[in-house]
Image (cartoon, rainbow, N blue to C red; front, side):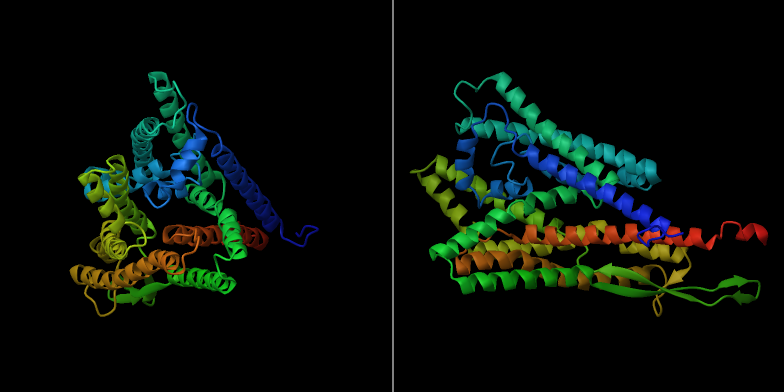
Length: 447
């Protein structure tokens, strides 16, 4: 039965549910953006903004990007979802190397809930440490109002930041359950995209003032489109290993034909995790050297630290080399921890499947491992190229370029995942309406 819009009843229901989920997602993003403008009590926002203007190329700049500008405003959501991301990554690694956690993970839905609970506890612990460091650092550099260096100020500020981090963790989980897409990824996406209007306006203003040639601005736009196209192609690319299932044997007779399937392996198995790790590890020593170098300005040690910060700082040749090497290393390490070829080969063997021309068991594991290694080589080069190309544009063209490689990858991957989930949601309801229309519920009983 069709409705006045010409859609089946199931399709209309699917659109209604999809619209409800989209509204919840938009509401969550709106609440998140409002929260980024609520300051922590006792912190002077103007002085914090001045600090971030001089520290945009340090680790503070990267954390501020993930927080959607909340850190430079020192809002209650200044920590963003970085504590939760860090806790999730740590728990993934610990699960891969700790037998007890791995056993819990394999315990179905109950194990997944227990791992999620451990991740929440670790998030609170990391948020406490980061909040205290931020508050102590801001207070030590005179970012607090006069007379605010008291125990009560520290308690209120730390509690405000930790509460904001826990709230974002809860909000992300609610978006995942009641909205569309992965909640944490959508919040990161919203924080990054929030800086686009300002970056575009700054680029046009630089062009108007003559600091940036119009043709160069057009070339930058073309390069950005080409990078997005390349990221989409690479993220969708797969290496499919042919898998065959043996025919069932009944007595001396084999029943049915051998079925053929595929084992899909993505070129980029590690996602954006290697870029985040590499950026954090590279920017952290550079930022520490710069801060302590400025604090000891005029001394011999201060000059050495400032020289080190300059050599490994963004835009320097040594920075490009170290960044690329770290990305490649983390691609291999993270892929090896998250994907176990031996376990995959054992599961294929248990399911009666095999790779044509390869013996089941150890030989299959070696074959999958070799294929995965070659894919990781290509994937790591691709990720390093995407991460470094914006920096080359900044250095060579001297432009106010907002997008970093990390943010570019996150934006494209999140949009692709969002569209995929929207399509899956619509398709599931279309199949449901078709099955109801076919009226197959009593087919088995009649036979």
